[in-house]
Length: 470
Image 1: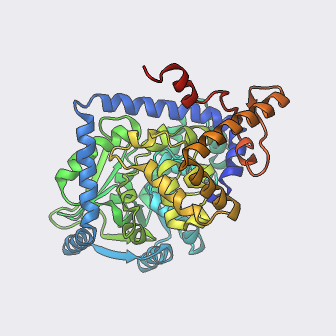
Image 2 (image 1 turned 180 degrees about the horizontal axis):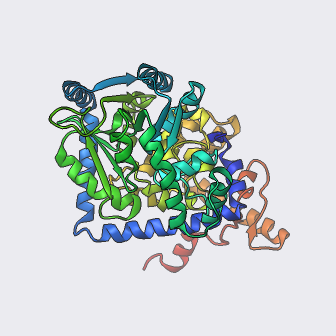
Image 3 (image 1 turned 135 degrees about the vertical axis):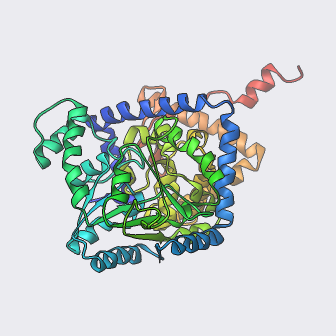
């Protein structure tokens, strides 16, 4: 079962003690970030391209309602079907109704975070529909009965040895230490699933409004098989994925693979606009696009609308020092890391994900890595401010006292001297330079980290002695 976002602190403590997780993250995160930096360094003016990509996403959000209507008109004109889902329940209902209409019993699915978000697979199981994940990482997650921990690398939290054990236990794979042999074993099993499936399901990286084209970007080829071999294709996509033009796509596709996997270009880019026709016989007989809101309109209408510009590359996760230590499952949500610490409280409600905005050092690595330059640190601070009003009375009183002291120079300086004397006395009493346990109500800090004692002399005093008048 997925852990709850409000259990982040408890989950993080357990994650920090997990040696297998530490090994897996060290292998995966370091490589991903280094490859991204190398790929971005190849662009002659990467910062200008980032700003161009940011402009494309912000323009799309500005005109979102009109662009979505254009998508619907273009796809309908080509014989496709567009369905709208206000929430997860309606999205699940649409999928199940499509399956019943076409007598679907077996289905294959390409990687899609929005289907994880709406908890689709359990609903399909209850409806008697066998849906097989075909992305290698998602397939391992499915047979291992766990959850993806990363928007691009679902099993980055697992070591190769753990993956091998799952495949041997769950699908009878012979023992091997060779990753290529493991992949080949799964590929052979999945090929039969593709050929026998009644329905194929995908997400979507982009929807290009001017032509009503849905784009799925993959490296494994499963996206192309999923969307073209079965007679029915259902694409489940968040409403924020729409962009205005092919020119915008040409900009964004230069940054998505570089940011996600350090590649100049992903191996497969699948573009489709509807079902097969006499003029274009390749593809499914029936095509459905389900546009999912599920709280996005509320985000769009508020001060956090910029969060919807995310292109789900995972770069902010790879660069984040918090994620690198605790992994994605700790966040208790489909969307982990820095962007997840914004999106999850907005989708689930701040009270249901209160610790996540505080799961950041505010170092800015996420913003520096983001290919569309989303100001993640500022939004995390805004969310903290929103949550502050719901904190305990003593916390609110403490913040007011803190603000008052910082507004009065003499009081601030006197407080600094008293704090230096107090912390020096506590540190001396415990025999160390740092304080390992502060008294209530400050013990929250030292529950998870040491507190350095205040310097015996403040910077103001040092300046007066050494620089004043010079």
